[in-house]
Image (tube, rainbow, N blue to C red; front, side, top):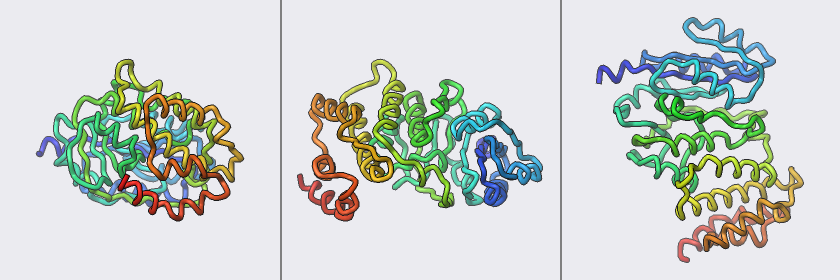
Length: 312
């Protein structure tokens, strides 16, 4: 246990215009009970003075680069890191003092990933991780509250995505890592991370369109190695697209998108037909009656559709 407790963990913090929050974030990270950490802040072309606040912290490595997006900032941090384990923290969030120390007992030699905020503590295979991720089984798709073995990033370029992928890039990273991982994945119920909501976050301002999702899904398909596609994975990918379909409907009033007239929707219907996929009652209703005008009304009784579907 002594050897494991001294394992270096690299904490990577992408920074973009978070001057108001970066000090609180760094204070929480540097207050860890676990002493074997390195902290790397990657300033991704910020236009505020956040980087000056970072410079005041002794021992924190600051890297400045032109604005390339959060995925590129994480990649820069990983490339500059020395730790055996990688952890991502957003610059506007904070962590508890035991976020790393509580996971030390889980760092066995054959563990590839540790994923927090799960319903239960258990060990799964990378294959199961893929399905839990795509099927949204109460799975936190965000990059934080997770530990990744650094060797995973060395074996593949898990953070190489087009610049225009600004929403859902976390899922793509996890999907690529899970497809290449060989060791076990540990699920943990730990939730020792404080996510801060504030105006300006991509998750609060980005509007999903069928055009974006078409590019996104094409990229996801290219990540699947030859020979890995099977019926279960194909059906999980259909379910994932149905969840995205609901998100597109929700954002239609803002984006002006006509999802049913899109090629993305036509491809979804074709794949469902070829796979004999029968969606849940909720999605059947959405596909027939859902639109920007009545989505909110339908969503208010979503629980009823879920309950009815349980008996079908």
